[in-house]
Image (tube, rainbow, N blue to C red; front, side, top):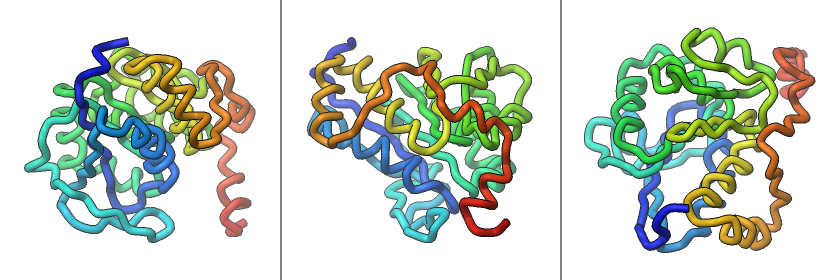
Length: 218
């Protein structure tokens, strides 16, 4: 555990088509730290940004003028496929992660970290249904197909959507202590999956038909 008296800042990245729970699941946990952590949002440009279902979040900063953050949170979502071609987004990830204590991703947000080179030489995981897409972004990453989340020191990646909340609590435990993380899980009435290697969704690896079934487009 590091110095708990330091007030850290967390930069939460938003982009068109981000997944709501990828972002707000972890932010609910981090937000419970109160004055020990300040959360700010950042996007390509400051202003409202629509999530995958259309709900908007306001980016407080644009990539060009964003301050340095101690923690970076990169969510995933349907919009990731488009962001993979955004040099602006990828350049920001390289710059921001270089200054951050920990860079985190949820779901296929790890595909962006991989494309940006942030995961080079590191262990990582991603959304299981679309795992092959993340894996295709870089052959310099040690991809783990069976993991709820992977803590690779300065970079922590998590599996699909809800796994980001478990990852957030694990990062809180690392920075502020296990007792603090447990108290937050109790406060939010969240059943925290503590074992990063326990991945019940590994069985659905690359089975993309589940997306069509879930969305009613099959």
